Image (cartoon, rainbow, N blue to C red; front, top):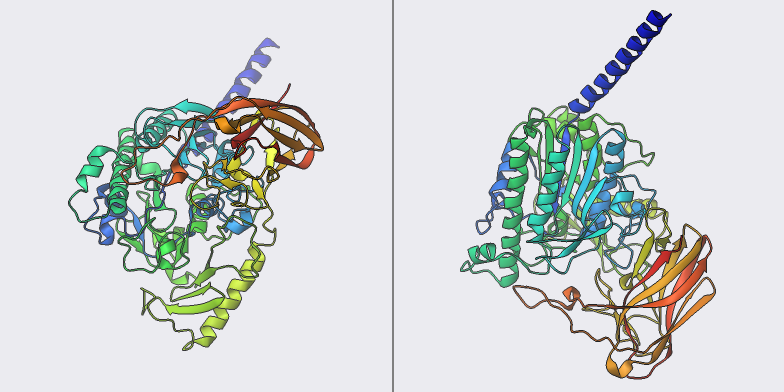
Length: 599
């Protein structure tokens, strides 16, 4: 009996060992993925794209070692590109149609490449700028990333010795932000060298503010460049050096042969500089606003020096990686993209279909009202563009600089493309554009920080109440200021996930002459009233910018006041902040309201 039990135990252990060995072997066979994306680096900001004034040896080497895409397209601005890249779906399907005010938030039900690869046994990490939601479950940790280090908004204000976050916890860093993000990505790779990993490194350079280490700034002196271009090139070279550090790490760990490395950028250049004589820059629906570099290296699979000629786009990255990794999608959501593996491996390229790629420009700060948005549709030959309620057409093979509108000469082409664009827009905007409410009380988020820039000002920005910074946009780090009309309000749309008691606090400043003003917060038919009796009026903090900086990159030290507690029911409601009593010329300035769930 004992002998039989012993033999059964041994057999069971052997079966477990064989199963686990098979699983480990299967995991080991899967390639790693290192996906690197820069912010506001244009197609022309690469030496091998015939720009003699910039130095990018690592990007140039990556293109030589793998594939270079000739016509790769993204969205005109940051957040839409990121959501399309991560989901394989046009950004309007994901809920993303802006860059701030919550319009950059991606719906929680969207399934990212990180979630799919994680379910297949991959370690997943993101290091840099997220820009698709800061609240759980829209936060990167809620969208498939085991590790997140960086920031979630559209831009960051300080690049040296700054404060970032690690998995929702604040972290104080030392050094320049590009170097710090690379350090974290390298550490992640080292920690996961014995299992397949997906490492996403969305650098925030060369996005403004214009801050760069001295050695790079000095290198681009005396080249006849304006200061913005000089700083942009310096920031790109800093990124290039860090790309070299990532590549060296793969070499040192003997991971290069089994790692897919992708390098791309999120939109056209953030300034008027060399861009291959294309029309447009960041924000444009034309070629110069959305055509960017894409280099892909996968030794043994992609022949060095491969050039991909057909038009491709950000929506193609997810299906491409899944095919290379041998992973089935667990999404259930249909993707708009197409696997580029046949083009990259140069197999069956003669059967590659003719495509239409679509672009929209809805990154305003209000809910779109137009029947048809500004946008464009691209084929291998044509670009049709709709702006200012008018269509134009360009033959991109004969006229790559878009100098000549040929709509009248080819009416049948324009009719076909414009109809396709209208049909596409109706399809991808089917879910609408209503703001995605801010989740409150998520099980993984005890404190919900509700930032000023995600509020809706009434009657409207600039009329008795405003956002800080240039214009009335409410960019990533803006606060509420110029609150001169006490009856003006700031309204946040909330979705209470966990009912219960919440403590409400507010981050604010108050000038001495305005002390004594009264404010009121209203949510779920409950009111909290507070008198701001103590002034707190610190100076605005600037940066180390190389040129005069925009007000969008200023910051302050904020005081905190407890407003009281609320009993919140599950479901949607509005949080409204309004004034009751004005003492001086203005009310307070507000950075954020925090709601803490009481256990």
